Picture 1 (tube, one colour):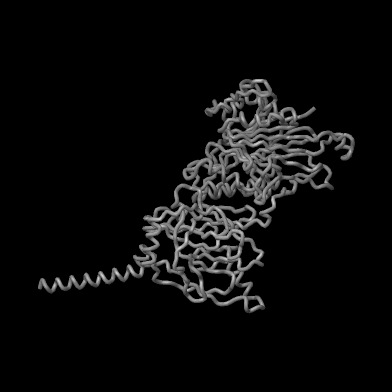
Picture 2: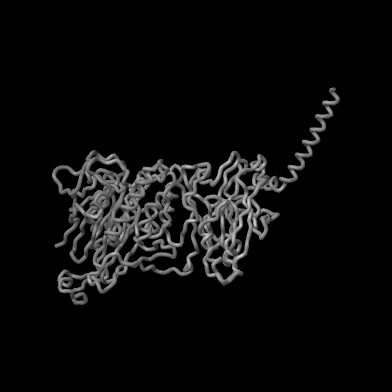
Length: 625
């Protein structure tokens, strides 16, 4: 009996051994690939831009050394139901996302792996042939994206029957055996049939168009980006969403959006972009042009704004304190959309020449993806081609990114003056009115006459509240005595915002307690020697550049302008975020400033989200003789 049982055990061992050898043989390619990714650490960075010729979703197993780049075979579609796999593996680069927790932007997750979007960089960047020129992604890999179906429908309706053929591609089923989890061996599949020569199915719901010959004038894709959270908005020129708010199996509450960028057609020629003037000239027969120096991606490259001779005023919209979260909370999503609509309405009504945001775009640790929140906020300005400058606040931080990453992202956005900020984060925006007109010339409608004087100059400082200003201001000491109108903006209030006794005030002043900010500048203490004279008051220093007012944020329940020193008005921007807690009688609002060279004045007023079509608290910041 024992001998009989021993023979059974030995027989089962032989069978098990043969099965193991057979499974190892079947999975030899996967084992070789896994071994390569475990022991070889390729020195290649993640994908941050460049021409690509292939794309797919790859699994990064937990035992891999890293997930930034992986070895994997390329899959080539064929006219059969099979996809041809290269025998040799190539190096793939993961599409980069500037947050520290990698699993947050995985497309799929399993017991032993996370899946990410990977691309294969094109070897010869100079030639765009065989590069990917368009992408589409389906929410379900069993479905065909609407963009692909539209293109196919156009081809089917074509009288040239040779432009389409029947192609069948294989899609892996979501169900798989246990060794699929370990070795990636596919066992079941479905077939996807599609008509069309241009679109190619790459698996996992991804469809591509390729540049097939040198005569193809379509630009290639040169960048891909990933965004997390709800209500993402893509508004940048040359960018388009590949998929919007794709809900993943591992994080159903955090949808993911993927967006792509086409190569700029004028990438090799940098020239000044002429943007339409937002204010009419005194002589309506002449168009006022706002001239901005910008590169091919509409990133501002010069701090100087110049107007044609007809433009005589300059309007600034100050917005502050949004505290966007971009999470899955339904009320937060609704209120953030309402805030963006409020900004859009103000831009349509006021048509400002410049927007200044004085901090607290994010809600600190409550904001999941800082990029999604910032993109949502600046979308109205980008869509309306209005330049803007951003001064970061105390809540503009993230658990998943550094402050330098946040600043770099803002600096690369279209129409953002942050691209030319100093190393400390300060900006000085100079505006030139080419021909200064007197009031008499305006009233008599004599534009070209002998009363024209030298051009008027305006200067607008946007300060980073967390960094010193001494070196920055010294760089602009040559403008002292040459500025006709000046305004300054920063996030934190100043000690002079807490005046004593009687002082002029317009608006609501509710937060009067002692400032808790410990920076020397917020206390009004800036020790500088300029042109041989020593100064220790920040407002005294700003007066050298003829600053007529200072705007700030930070305090949600103050929206007033008050005057405390040197005839300089100190103005709170209020708070624009609709879901912020406020005391009764304070509503989400924005502040506007208008510099009028003809009337020789600077005025200010406000709009709020309750009665956005009406202005209130209209006042003079400066009134000339």
